[in-house]
Length: 327
Image (cartoon, rainbow, N blue to C red; front, side, top):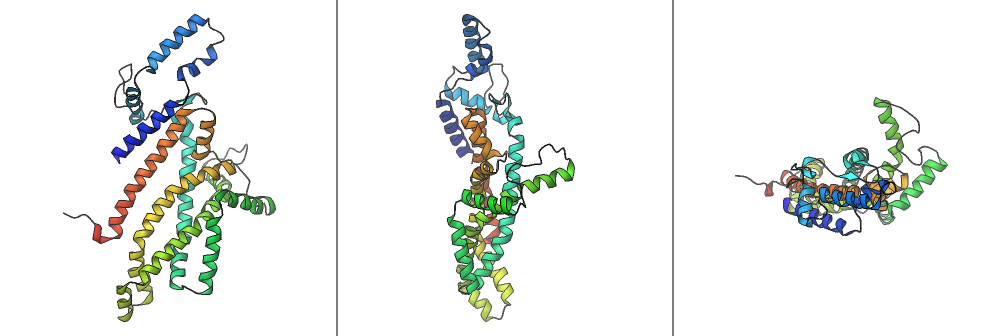
């Protein structure tokens, strides 16, 4: 994880620094019209020197991470929770991303819980009743849901639930002009996020339920399952104790990878519903040439992916005793 983090962070920092942009020029842009050209150029050169923009890129990268000190002698980088300064919003990046990152994490965790609560029981039921009419109906329905892009699902749901039925608002994360606090504010935000959460959950049902069904069908065909049934073990115990434990290992991979994938899927959902999340912020920061914010969002997704890979390995040991590391 550490090696991958440093490689990815350096590549991303190098690529973003290849984009034609001059932070010193942006910093002095408002003062350019009020200063004489010679004074402006001197201030510009001094600012570039103080910001270290003329140093080699490997030195700037190390200062950006906070592993070597700044010109002032202080360590002030990512490892010290200094994520840079937004030239568009004119405030530190940590203040720009605090609200969007909370919204995105909440949406994705909530959608994950909803999807798992539906797809795992549904996939197990379809595997146990393989070939039945209801199983065939679920499979056709899941293929249709899996094949439709998430932005098409979002538009259809907006038309049905927001335009025709008027059950949910079309966009936003709160009532305009309202100053709710406490539980009332949380419920108001949850009401506005209801339709996006339904869209994200619905878009994930097809692929996840089919994967759980396939894993359970394979587990139910194993020899020890037939032996357990021959010995008279109750069917519920066979399904949820013996078969499900064996089917859980590939499902864990799916759950973690899918959870990481919906972070990228939330980019479309947030843009469609006008939600101020990380995905929408990323697109806006790229359009506004606010590269410090863009770089932080990219590093956020990198850390989420690395932590997800670690959790996957740890959960493997918890689910499958054969691969646990013992003394």
